[in-house]
Length: 297
Image 1 (tube, rainbow, N blue to C red):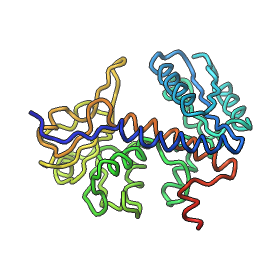
Image 2: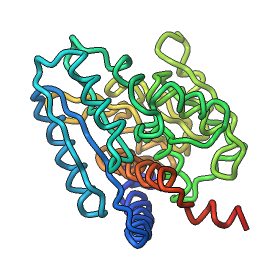
Image 3: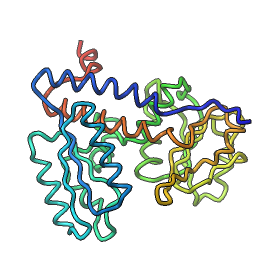
Image 4: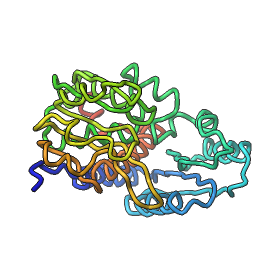
């Protein structure tokens, strides 16, 4: 029987979204309705499903959710035009380009045409630079969600040995930057390894907290985990609609705490998207968050 404590993401997301809903209500009282716009290119069923989920969540939280659906044959110019329209729309405070987009289009080029203050994914080059320098700005959603998950479940991070397997721009690299920043829920000793390191397992086996971010199904097995360690499954791939996580479920026999196969990091990622959208609306309308108000006193 697995002995690891489960670290579900759903209660973390619910906690974050409760705060977001209260923030949206406060904005409504000032006459502002935050708007989270989305762009979908093509007819991928999974991507369309994710957009529907985000639009439904936006409505429940009190956001407007303007949407553009471009055909799979759309050109780079078509995509840039849709982004430009949202960049200047007065009722849009956040913008999401659903990824992946068709192979003939360049996502990074498109992202660079977005107003970085609308970037709810936190992936615009300017926002990644803000993260590297410790400046205020939208944080990449999955890394921020992982930090929130660890904090919610009272997992000590400061001063701990954190090993991240994976160096991707959406997870491994920004997470390392985030968890080395000086605050109680971070401030860790972080090592980033990847599959190009032949002896990567020697690093993962010493980790107090092991975070899988490689996008290689089942790459983390029990022999790669120090007994009693905290294991966070951040990397996934999909086979159709089936989720294939980096962390093999048998790791629960060795770990002290572990995220579940489904309902771990995913819900916190979505919650952080809406927190970024709320913060973007606050910045655009000159309203401070409760934390900013406390700091100003």
